[in-house]
Image (cartoon, rainbow, N blue to C red; front, side, top):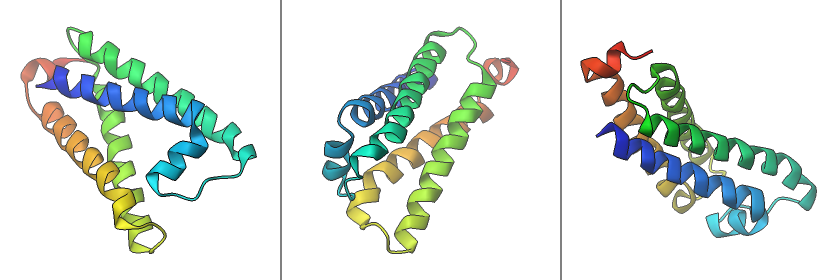
Length: 128
């Protein structure tokens, strides 16, 4: 179950990376968010590169015989953070529920899967 989960996470990171790097304004608009001013593309582009790097990392973990617990826990931390940030912005009324439902659902599924995998198979618990 871990490998398919890691491939799905990798694909989601690649998609986020490509969209934030190459189509930031359009992506924000499609998401229902305020389109940032063009000069914010600099910071958003740097974020896109990080999404791509995490996608590559998750793809490497999916192919590794013993995936690194550190990197699995690191992605778990990111997913929990993504969920909590979405919940906070929703609670503050800064975003509409339709904007956060899909990303928060993804984060919840990914975090749950990663947490179960980290707590589960002995070969994964023994991995470094």
